[in-house]
Length: 88
Image (cartoon, rainbow, N blue to C red; front, side):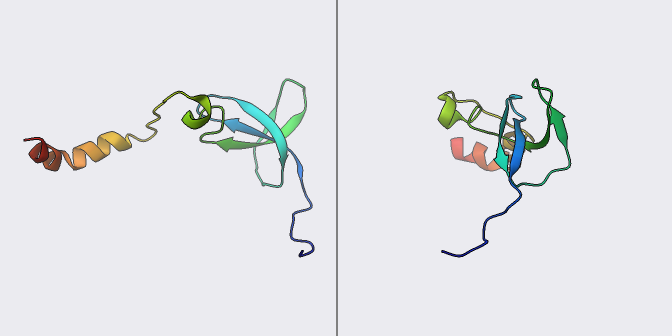
């Protein structure tokens, strides 16, 4: 096995799921400029996540559609003529 391939700067980091606000703490070597103080009064580096196991439909069992940038509407508008021809 190769030596010295793993980072040495592991520390406790807070990860926040931005879709539901859930925060969890784990060890990580990821870098960030933001920090957050949690209920325990300790300040942690903060990494923001788009989706995590607390909001992903596979883990929650709920089908929750998140359209962050209107991508579905943009697609439907772009291909509206083609879709209308297909339904006729």
